[in-house]
Length: 286
Length: 292
Image (tube, each protein chain N blue to C red):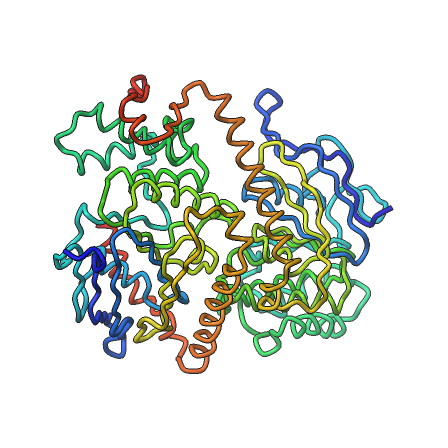
């Protein structure tokens, strides 16, 4: 297998049934991701970012095209791909540790419970929850709950992590903290990360490449921007780097252009197809 | 004497033996016509601060003064805009605004009050939607109604509590532009509460970080000496913008770190913090007592 072509997305299209026939949300989406790379998908609400992510996760199938990961075609969800959603979906009657252990029971069926607890505890410490492992989700802030979500995702040791607006529900400062946590986890494990976001700063700070999606329907890759800021990235140095602001401006320019385009070219119903989100949600909850 | 003065303000919630101390020793003074923003974590006590100024709650210690008078309750000289728009669903846009006008301008005739309300509906660019009900409006339009309602009572001070927090990035940008215009046209004293550092710098004369809670207090104030009107794109390349952004963000992240370290130190059940993967593998973590 070629490490430069760890994930290949070929000519991906997805249409969802609408009242006036099928709505093509994504059309002709192509992308190749190397192993260990951090890629962001950025675009306006409803442009189909999450649809692409769901197809890579195997939660929903494409209408046309193929996704190949590690030389194998993706047809269903698997433990080689971890998914992190906006809300971490923790069981409220279990402690943070038990929530992470529960995931490990699926991923490490042969290990002893003590080994699983040790691994879960290790990852909770890594996300800064060494003091809160015995707390229930209701005793944790939203930011801490998403830390548990990240610990669980990394503890499962998937080859690739798919993050769907993982920090979208957090305030912008907590979001910065969690971005640092995510980069620290990545530094050690070097997982391939595919991240859906609409936060310009977040995509520049985290990624090796930012994939800008055009506005739907028929959304596809608009531009791909390389982020060559040196790693490890510290917030202080990055925010002081003029390059960061150039990249940021290029992204904002693209998104503003897409917004103008969307406002003039699309009927409001097609800009954000709520019907398109239904089936994806149902599948992911099952 | 500044127009708004908070001195030594403390506020907590709960019974005395298990009280959560939210704000501790908050000192703030805002001059007339100034736009000051306070940036902090959610849960740090930003809304408590607004509620104190609005007169919805009273401080445990210290004093809150507006225009030299001690705040003892809500009043029409202080308008508040909350994150959730708090509109009456059975009234139209104009009626929602007029309801507030009717309460405050009792001496005007009905038609005068109507014209007054309409002026502010038009100021937020909702003239064509004046007859619509809140459910027919998008989130951004609803927040505009809320802003129009607060402005229509012609308060001395406008208190904005995360007014754009519930909106998507694009709509937020549009409304920030409108707030900038309104603030320049009206010259009102405004206090903007936000968790978005960029928003704080874009709009205000001074930006002040509110440290992480519990026992949150205000950090050092920074003057934003950037000429108006400010455009997002131009700001991006402005070294003054970058410097303020960096210092405010770092102050906040540092205060969050300090508060977390204090909490860790208090918690006897903490796991050992691993340095590297290998070390952690050789030293099993002590979590045996977890089972209920």
